Length: 323
Image (cartoon, rainbow, N blue to C red):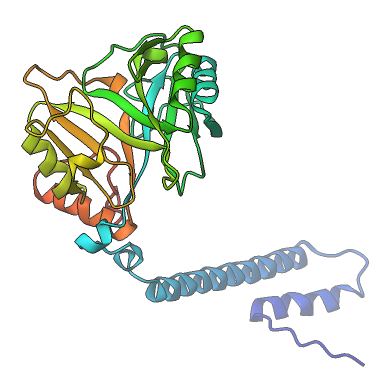
């Protein structure tokens, strides 16, 4: 025979005793009902109090064993060796016609769509520019994004025009047959000037020969700057790039030894910076340069920029701040 042990309170024992007495009576009294009700309430209150104490104890134990928030954060490592492992990921350009861009890049350059995403709200770190609209991005290039450089085509719904700037001059892309690519561009109605094609939304692309030992199709991105030395310092000091030899860049009329510098990472798509005395106009059209940086090095960059009195859009938040 099974035996069950039950812990009770004195009030509940009294109520149960009253219940035994009432079993011989066919008309239970009001007093007996009151005793039963008080006994049940007392038991419920005791149980609820015990549960609250148990939860409070569990929370205290969990809080004591939880590591400090700072211990969970990636520690900044300000190391040139670490930051040198960074890689140019992609360049963002704006588009007013996604389909026209896809035809341009796939038919002329042989690129392929890597992925496409739609967003109902503007990007918190202004990936789509400073536009308060739904938007989409289409990654297009030659290989996996984590291995190869590519372009991000950003489309803002309701925006049908971008003011063309003068900072981004052209992107150099190597293909197997440059002449065939230039002829294809002309046949599609795009202006061709030497080895440069003026594509959709006024972006220019220089067509070069893809060498047998080159895996990366994107050769460089050319930027016009007003202060050459300051631009070089920024990319080298803040971004961890290094100066490279200009002779590795195919000759172009706008490049000269006294007004041009090349910066970049090892085995990455470099930037060709050239000085222009005229005012350089930079706006939403120029897009942005996305660089993949090791987490520890990235936190070191943000920390250094903050100490220098500079700010960054979408910088690492201070998670120790309860706000």
